[in-house]
Length: 127
Image (tube, rainbow, N blue to C red):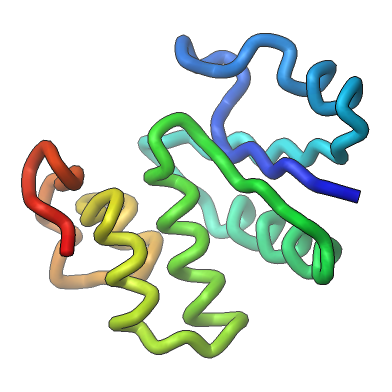
Protein backbone atom coordinates (compact mmCIF):
# COMPACT_ATOMS: atom_id res chain seq x y z
CA UNK A 1 0.00 0.00 0.00
CA UNK A 2 1.18 3.51 -0.74
CA UNK A 3 0.31 6.18 1.79
CA UNK A 4 -0.27 9.93 1.61
CA UNK A 5 0.05 12.01 4.78
CA UNK A 6 -1.33 15.53 4.46
CA UNK A 7 -0.35 18.03 7.16
CA UNK A 8 -2.33 20.96 5.71
CA UNK A 9 -5.91 21.85 6.66
CA UNK A 10 -8.50 21.06 3.98
CA UNK A 11 -9.93 24.58 4.26
CA UNK A 12 -6.68 26.28 3.19
CA UNK A 13 -7.19 28.28 -0.04
CA UNK A 14 -4.42 26.26 -1.75
CA UNK A 15 -5.60 22.86 -0.49
CA UNK A 16 -6.13 20.16 -3.09
CA UNK A 17 -9.76 19.64 -4.07
CA UNK A 18 -11.13 16.23 -3.09
CA UNK A 19 -7.76 14.87 -2.08
CA UNK A 20 -9.40 12.08 -0.08
CA UNK A 21 -11.40 10.93 -3.11
CA UNK A 22 -8.41 11.20 -5.46
CA UNK A 23 -6.29 9.07 -3.14
CA UNK A 24 -9.07 6.51 -2.77
CA UNK A 25 -9.50 6.21 -6.55
CA UNK A 26 -5.76 5.62 -6.89
CA UNK A 27 -5.73 2.98 -4.17
CA UNK A 28 -3.73 5.14 -1.77
CA UNK A 29 -4.26 5.22 1.96
CA UNK A 30 -4.88 8.81 3.07
CA UNK A 31 -3.95 10.14 6.50
CA UNK A 32 -4.93 13.70 7.36
CA UNK A 33 -3.26 15.51 10.26
CA UNK A 34 -4.39 19.14 9.86
CA UNK A 35 -1.72 21.34 11.44
CA UNK A 36 -2.57 25.00 11.98
CA UNK A 37 0.43 26.92 10.66
CA UNK A 38 0.21 29.52 13.42
CA UNK A 39 0.06 26.93 16.24
CA UNK A 40 1.60 23.51 15.64
CA UNK A 41 0.77 21.21 18.54
CA UNK A 42 2.63 18.42 20.27
CA UNK A 43 -0.43 16.23 19.67
CA UNK A 44 -0.03 16.82 15.92
CA UNK A 45 3.52 15.53 16.12
CA UNK A 46 2.44 12.49 18.13
CA UNK A 47 -0.18 11.63 15.48
CA UNK A 48 2.52 12.05 12.83
CA UNK A 49 4.88 9.70 14.70
CA UNK A 50 2.10 7.13 15.02
CA UNK A 51 1.33 7.37 11.30
CA UNK A 52 5.01 7.02 10.39
CA UNK A 53 5.48 4.03 12.67
CA UNK A 54 2.38 2.35 11.25
CA UNK A 55 3.73 3.01 7.74
CA UNK A 56 7.17 1.41 8.23
CA UNK A 57 8.18 -0.44 5.09
CA UNK A 58 5.60 1.37 2.95
CA UNK A 59 6.03 4.12 0.39
CA UNK A 60 4.90 7.34 2.10
CA UNK A 61 4.35 10.75 0.53
CA UNK A 62 4.08 13.59 3.06
CA UNK A 63 2.90 17.02 1.96
CA UNK A 64 1.40 20.32 3.06
CA UNK A 65 1.16 23.59 1.13
CA UNK A 66 4.81 24.77 0.80
CA UNK A 67 6.60 21.91 2.61
CA UNK A 68 7.31 24.00 5.70
CA UNK A 69 5.19 21.81 7.99
CA UNK A 70 6.62 18.69 6.35
CA UNK A 71 10.26 19.62 6.82
CA UNK A 72 9.74 20.70 10.44
CA UNK A 73 7.93 17.45 11.25
CA UNK A 74 10.55 15.39 9.44
CA UNK A 75 13.32 17.28 11.22
CA UNK A 76 11.83 16.37 14.60
CA UNK A 77 11.07 12.83 13.54
CA UNK A 78 14.55 12.23 12.12
CA UNK A 79 16.26 13.56 15.23
CA UNK A 80 13.97 11.97 17.84
CA UNK A 81 13.02 8.69 16.18
CA UNK A 82 15.71 7.92 13.61
CA UNK A 83 18.76 9.17 15.50
CA UNK A 84 19.78 11.50 12.68
CA UNK A 85 22.28 14.15 13.78
CA UNK A 86 20.76 17.58 14.38
CA UNK A 87 23.00 19.25 11.78
CA UNK A 88 22.13 16.74 9.06
CA UNK A 89 18.38 17.00 9.73
CA UNK A 90 18.58 20.79 9.94
CA UNK A 91 20.43 21.02 6.61
CA UNK A 92 17.56 19.13 4.92
CA UNK A 93 14.99 21.46 6.50
CA UNK A 94 17.00 24.56 5.56
CA UNK A 95 16.65 23.64 1.87
CA UNK A 96 13.01 24.76 2.28
CA UNK A 97 13.02 27.20 5.21
CA UNK A 98 14.47 28.28 8.54
CA UNK A 99 11.58 28.26 11.00
CA UNK A 100 11.10 31.11 13.44
CA UNK A 101 8.58 31.94 16.15
CA UNK A 102 6.17 29.11 17.06
CA UNK A 103 7.81 26.73 14.60
CA UNK A 104 11.25 27.33 16.08
CA UNK A 105 9.75 26.55 19.46
CA UNK A 106 8.05 23.46 18.01
CA UNK A 107 11.36 22.05 16.74
CA UNK A 108 13.28 23.12 19.85
CA UNK A 109 15.41 25.86 18.25
CA UNK A 110 15.59 28.38 21.08
CA UNK A 111 17.92 30.66 19.08
CA UNK A 112 15.22 31.36 16.44
CA UNK A 113 12.12 31.73 18.61
CA UNK A 114 12.22 35.50 18.28
CA UNK A 115 13.14 35.35 14.57
CA UNK A 116 10.79 35.48 11.61
CA UNK A 117 10.57 32.53 9.24
CA UNK A 118 13.02 32.62 6.36
CA UNK A 119 12.28 30.83 3.11
CA UNK A 120 14.87 29.41 0.72
CA UNK A 121 15.26 31.24 -2.57
CA UNK A 122 13.25 34.16 -1.20
CA UNK A 123 15.24 35.15 1.90
CA UNK A 124 18.47 33.17 1.47
CA UNK A 125 20.25 30.76 -0.85
CA UNK A 126 20.11 27.17 0.41
CA UNK A 127 23.27 25.12 0.40
